[in-house]
View 1 (cartoon, helix red, strand yellow):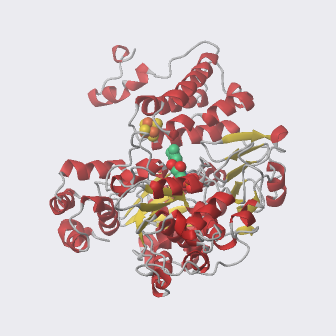
View 2 (tube, protein in one colour):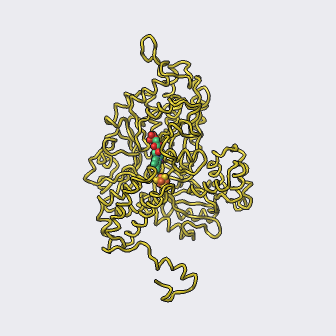
View 3 (cartoon, rainbow, N blue to C red):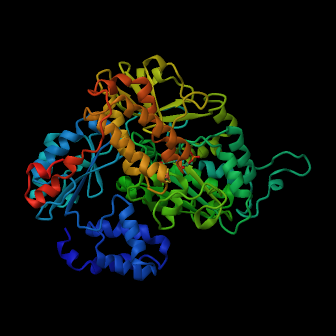
Length: 620
Ligand SMILES: Cc1cc2nc3c(=O)[nH]c(=O)nc-3n(C[C@H](O)[C@H](O)[C@H](O)COP(=O)(O)O)c2cc1C
Ligand code: SF4
């Protein structure tokens, strides 16, 4: 790949700039394309981009430094990222990473001296049901084993372009193991929009007022229209599926009611929580349903533009998503005059670049606006001041899919499933030690045990609900139910078998949060690092009871003082582990007295090497 281009990065960058207007909000999308073309963002490209967008070079470099998939140095013709999620590790990813590095003759995180290849680790790639997984030049490779790696070594040696690698390497399965009422059959494109738009005759998107959907004579609603659609959403009691469980109807109505010349609809497909992959499956098999939910939302709130913010790990879905959008445009379900009405709505894709924090809605909006993904102040909420400081609905992929079904079948139908406070069904991403990992749809209220039975994981000693930021459930708790009344969840369901060392799980989670902290606030920036040091200290057999107390103290401090949800939930798993799996910590502790985590003498090793000294005076 582009050794020659690297000598002249401008040649590759110019065509990319030509298709992007001089709008700083497009910066991240330009950088993503440049990185893909050159496998780095070289200084010359920084200058060209900065001049094109009329921003400072420091601003461009700031983004390159922030997003994991951007790099200011060339990463090689073949850039390989192994997924470092705990479930990939349980499937042997660490051994496979070492094996590939040694076969390729490359150090982890470094580029081989001939510039051909580099191997790295990244947080979860969202293929937990078909791991171990990796990304090669942005494309996912699943079910990694030694035979596959040997083949990769040959392909790299032969300089075979990735586009000519065996297609079966890149096969991504849906593994939809159980469907319930929402995802039982294919969604008919336009079905929900027709029930909202067509009965109302010539309603226009922006001129809809509540009274218009009520017959003045009888007071009875005579057409669905925007207001009735919203009422159906209220009846459904649909709660957001992205984690917090906020009621969708309240969010939509708030957005609609704030006076504004423009509003936005953002679909959150960042799906960065390790162990979560349902949004990938929805976008792969139910993209129409998701886009329909977004369009319905645009109609209800009076927004003309929708943005699908999607993690770059799912780049392989780009042709499929663009094809679905094109088909919807051709069918009159997107664009101007949807279904012949005055309703207009367009959807664009916006790619992330490897930052878990960008799943948090205000950080995502910063990213959409071409900045680093740093969370904003809590108030005003994005629904009041979101994209371009305009009212913005941010909902999860699954929330929009469910909203489309509410639009189609009505709120009462939806609310007839699930529990009193958790209506409808939920997708669960089952991975780890079980026979049938994959996606399972259940009505809310299903017990942990029932899912374990269905996926073949009843032997489990623990289940991590809702990812590293969620809750660790042990055997005596397996009759607890998944619903806001008991265990709220984004849908992640990681199964840990009876022989797993649960300390290794927390060590992986702790490092995940240390890596993903955006660094904005001190409690999280420093706290996640201190926690990682303490956990590593215990892992090295140097921990003392004082260190465990320190872990708890820091965890509590972060919960109450961190600026956003990442820092506030980053220690949940540690607190659970210290209560439920204390034995796994204590068996590593060979000292009862406090030992410093920092080895002052070892830290002088580099200086000793540089000065060529190893005498006693060079040691402490
Ligand atoms: C650190 C962090 C990461 C998040 N990641 C996601 C994500 O990947 N997908 C998602 O839908 N919501 C995520 N959220 C929640 C969003 O901020 C937001 O609440 C959600 O997208 C709203 O959609 P919903 O109401 O449909 O759940 C995250 C929150 C935090 C604090
Ligand atoms: S809590 Fe962590 S992720 Fe959130 S703003 Fe603070 S440093 Fe950033």
